[in-house]
Length: 528
Image 1 (cartoon, one colour):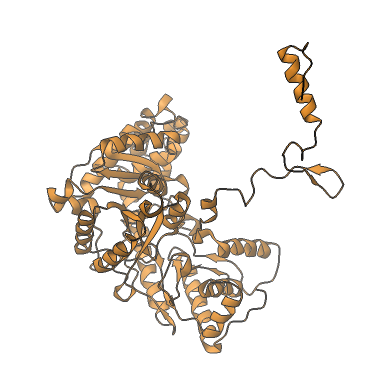
Image 2 (image 1 turned 90 degrees about the vertical axis):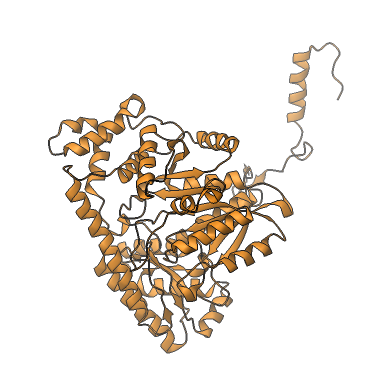
């Protein structure tokens, strides 16, 4: 393309652009515009399923998967007057306590109301200890407003309160507030730590050991980060206990194709509800030290322990009581949340993580990574402060707080016992004791004909089972295949959170559905 010699530079560029724009898109090497039905041209999408981030397509999260989507549709159909074999959908798929009717702790909501609308501080209906907590939190916020950003690591006074809580919980083991990070629920801290750990390619790619059954956050995060998921199986025959021999088998096999760097433990367990013994925790710490693994302790259910003889032991406390050989070398991140226990404040997204023995240079990188998201939600930080610094004896709100806390935990303990008792009366269902947390993960026998029907539909048998149960009973459970399970076994996860009267209905419906399945040795498949 020869330009006239008399043109200046600016005119020449303009001339080139006009000439290029007159060429067809094909000659310019661009995709040919698509023709719409009315004859006009339409652009293709820049982002398509074929060119999007491939790791995102590998992410699965069973807790909010297809069964839950269908449950929402059924609720809508019921509201529109469609006839169903049930009057309501009962969602027992997720640990969302307040969605299932659990009442919030009065003191927590009073302080949050005061922080959100400080004019209420002059209202005499609020107790003085709630007002003093609110003033302390507001004085720690920029501009004395909960609407201001906090420091990326979290509000200083809240991290100090978290550190004091950890010291009390662990019998005086010191906690440095500088090792405490306030997070958007525990999930945020877990994913952040995994981001720091993942590196390498091919056989050097980071592997992370997770329990099977597992909470799908872990498998989803590892898929998104392109890390290698290393499965170790809990022992269902021994109440979902953790066996060091199984950890060793899993690790040895994984080292043939990746670089295992971290070991994740959920205690009390989700979805399995087991509570690890102190001896087991000591064994895990020794194993992590011997194999040079970074320990991640998910302890969000630490107040949810129900079974006689069971007790929560924090990994940090056990680590320090094992002496300097371990307490000064083993790298540990532990996580807690406002979403579980007796609080059930899932929507506020409050949480913290404490790090132990982290390399100082890595710690700087952690702070940098957290600063990218500016800060965790300040109302969640305020709520975390109340969880770790609740009303004390002698304060106006103490008796009501203890009464509400005790009632919530007692109700959960009773529902844990009820769930185990009822499910174990059903032939073809076997339920381990719900020692802690908020879930039951019973093993179910599925007739061979149903298994074959599921395979024809390209579904896992327990997905088929749970979907059919939803359609017939309105009970929304999550198939065990979404959490992982040993080959040839089938399970479902259900929460113990519904109110007792509704839980009894749920359990009875599950019982009757399973009895129909067992009696007929087949599952009808109309509508699938």
